[in-house]
Length: 175
Image (tube, rainbow, N blue to C red):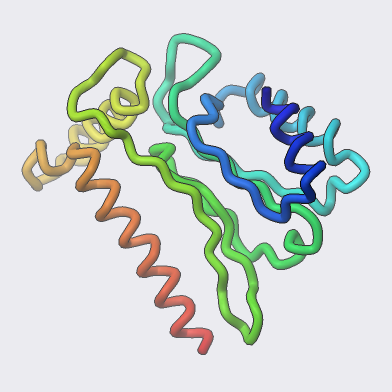
């Protein structure tokens, strides 16, 4: 399915494409190899003009497919404008910062927030993120209220705002 999607993106000459719920695992060497080989088969002759970034949580899962995951691809001349790759350790977003006109920065980002309020299974993205949040909370001796710290929806909004504010601040420094 990945190769079919890549082939379609190449056929329609997509300069930028984004996928959510890729079920890919950034931490799995076999999954990274499949992504790399699929990219090479589809864009082999243009490999320097194709960039792909992904995000998935840092949590381990039992099977090969990992619920969640995001992907952003940049093709063609836009690859020369890439300033920074953006990945989220919780698998909530990924993307690129591109150099725009007049020194401006263009942020290309795909984001996915879990919709559940409770875990629907052991390997769901909700469960993956909750285990990461709890591990951080316990390992770092957090003083904030535990339930507020591990609240998926509040964390998503807070952390995304922080990411966007950094992009705005960088833009202000440029102009």
